[in-house]
Image 1 (cartoon, rainbow, N blue to C red):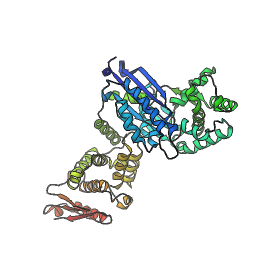
Image 2: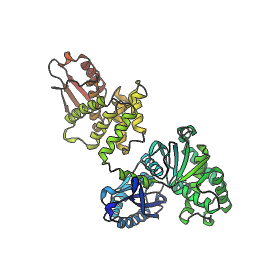
Image 3: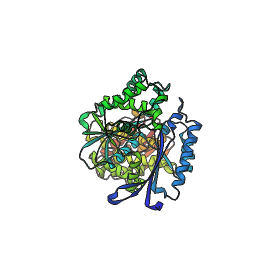
Image 4: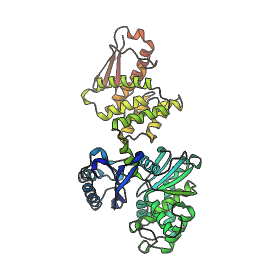
Length: 493
């Protein structure tokens, strides 16, 4: 098949690297054309200082070179390559990604845990029949575990936790002993790591539960080979496998029907985490789903949405979900952008501009929760909402701007000296004050200039008398900035 008729997803996991190539069939379903998997065990190459070893990087590069040969001829917009927990942790990830992208022939993106969870849910939902049920999805990977609740193809609630089959096997079964004490320690530590999930994912929030990817498939294969229904994982079946591991006693002697060779070194850690999850969340049974992160990435490619449109759609979805006054949001965005350009000038950074425009569109998103301290509610939504797939530094800046757009500035005193935050924030705060009446303010003749850490706002003659409330709000704003390393001088006429 010609590359232009295909889509491809590359998943750089902690245990395995995978390449899936699909063709868009009838009813917009993606039909698998080719699937390549290599057990790279990159997660085992992280030392205590979170450095990825030269050997682990080399194993990964060699695999990516082979994948790159297969992807020759694919257009950039038809391939997505994503890396997960191991490279999120590795302090030398940039070195690996730079060389790896060259060998693959396409850029490798280190995604957040939340984005990983979203892609996993999308991949799982694509393999399931249509249903109104709220689905709980558990994905135990090599170094992270994702827990998601969704409906149809949309993830509604998602979280990522830093534990998995590779990391838990290395930490609690490093001596190879499959002992009660090692299992007890691994399960207890997993429950502690997942403690927040107990309240966040109560049984009343979902109707059915699924398990996806490596550990789930390994358990399913082992159960099936022993004459059990491997499509449904229960606590009693997990305990049966657990007892088999205890009876075997050591990883070197581990031979269970159906368990693949590459799973032997990490199955103890994976089963420990799965036991912790089902006990902690009181899950009676998990249905094994075939979809995974790579299918989610393929379906994202199928959308054919350029990044700007995708970001706009995410912002619009948040506005609709939380009843934001979009006319007011657009008004504040337009005025804030104009003011910021005047004081930022040629030093404007693209991320600062994107953060300001997004924060302006979402500055009132917390009002649906409460008018009191709505900026704090809005900041929480921006920080934790899984619908938005902003990269971490952009998400942090948006959250800071929404938090700081009203009220005292001391809540941001630890970062307020940074002009990349302070100047967009000043522009946003002034814009919200000028737009207090929820109609287009009179800004003709209004000027904002900057000299070092001092900004000066001047108005045309008669403006202060014509708009006394706006003038009063600006005076309060100047007083707020006087308590920071910045100052806002007013020339109101």
